Image 1 (cartoon, rainbow, N blue to C red):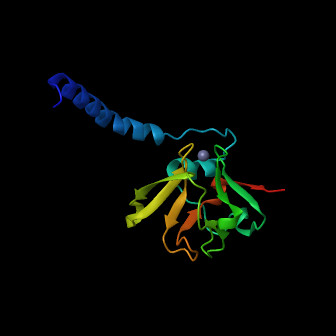
Image 2: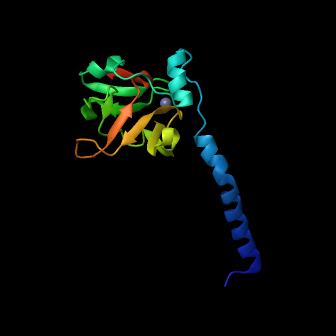
Image 3: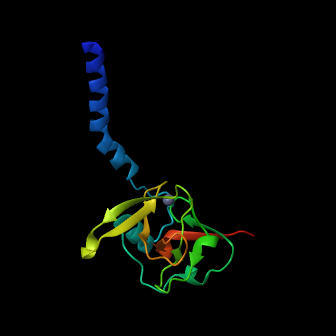
Length: 153
Ligand SMILES: [Zn+2]
């Protein structure tokens, strides 16, 4: 049987964690400009969840081996092994590198979509759909402007 004092202490600690939870969430969702050279178009997408026009990204024709990084913070997000041509006009990937992104449900434009953002710096990258052709079944539809490709060699 717990003493009254101990019970109060435990209750106090759980209350503090419940109160702090939203702050923790807000803190993790904070987006910061890390790359000072971001263009207006890049900022519109990353900080206001905009979308670039389809078939405009130079990365659509990128076929080399390497990694795709966050254009804001440089975090490694996708391997070229997971890239595929989805025909949608946006760079598409079947899988992200472990821990690269965090997700949230996005109800904008009357649709229910899964938005994903860089786990490191919080900026928006795209939406993930569950209609991919690969074994994962996932299709990460990424704005090309949010990515920097670094070839292996
Ligand atoms: Zn980032």
